[in-house]
Length: 469
Figure 1 (cartoon, rainbow, N blue to C red):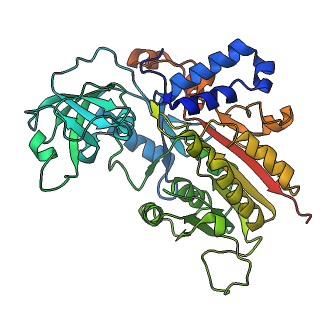
Figure 2 (cartoon, helix red, strand yellow; figure 1 turned 90 degrees about the horizontal axis):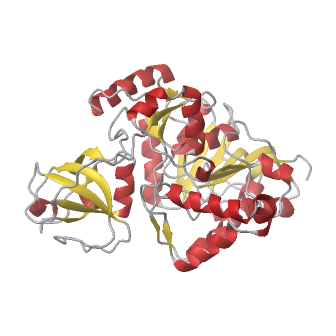
Figure 3 (cartoon, rainbow, N blue to C red; figure 1 turned 180 degrees about the vertical axis):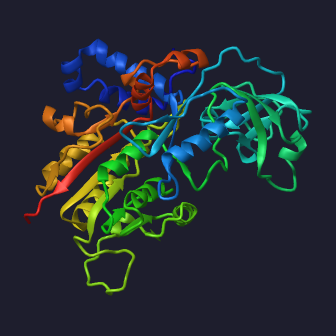
């Protein structure tokens, strides 16, 4: 059941993806019709939010049971007594799942309109209110306290400050304006803070703005899986190569009981600041964050013994997470993907540079986990095929927990190799809405199964470096 239009790509990117999802290996295995149906289903899923909001509990500070109780009370408050369950995941015992109610198709659309940018719109579809910087346009004469309908400008064509917009827009729900139009577009400079408080969103998800901030980290389900697969142990030295904003970094530190070292790197200073803030908020002390380019993190010269930061000597780390910069096509919801084909194809060589450094920095017997939040073959299975050919010291290893599907055909990997990979493919389940009645009639096992499948698009590979040189 598709409520929004399928995700739109630039023409050359669409052509590229069509070839990826109609590759010969895939067509031979599935047949043309089934391969095409899966691809079209994927495009529909990408424009809709996942069926569940997942949050990771900071088990360093509180038990899952305690946080679950607090969260249930908070959601009841936000949803005015609506009894939406908070589920524990049987295989990921530090996350909680909240079903997303919607799409709600009976909402009345009001005369006063607010247009928000695409990124703000996607946040609203996942439970956020509208903050002033996200507002692009608002109807004339809107005052604080007015009821407004909120729309997303998915193509980015609305002019800031416009009084009306007749371009392509997608209805996100209704809210109450916290400010007047003149205050929002004040000549004294851009305001911050809450602009529209959403009261009738198309998709009903809890807002996590300042909700249990030391106890909860809002994180997509596959992103939580990654840290469990790396499985860091207390006392080890771990590298998170491309770490911002720090969700996986803080998860790794938590799994190690804050004992050992987690070195986090990112080459953008503001993002490194965010990692440090998250580590402080979650009260994790074993994290050291550095502003550094991961492609240059290997030292060829002897270091000072006391030097903590990069560059590092070869074979310095017990385990390495390379959650690589990628084209991000698995993120949901996304109704319009603006990157060019040149941008999309620029990630593979960068990922290979980072991967090469990671292999050299890893100790013999160590674990390397490679992950992306995208759907292409070139950034996922093709990278695995390249890695196995380029680095004889690496072996693919089974993943635990294995919740997603196997790898996608098309990169020349064997069936056994594909089974060792983990690809989260939203098209693996039928796109469906959820209302409060169907939710109450559902078995918990079925809801967990849906949460495992109807999430963002994501890819994970786990390698072990052999002891032999």
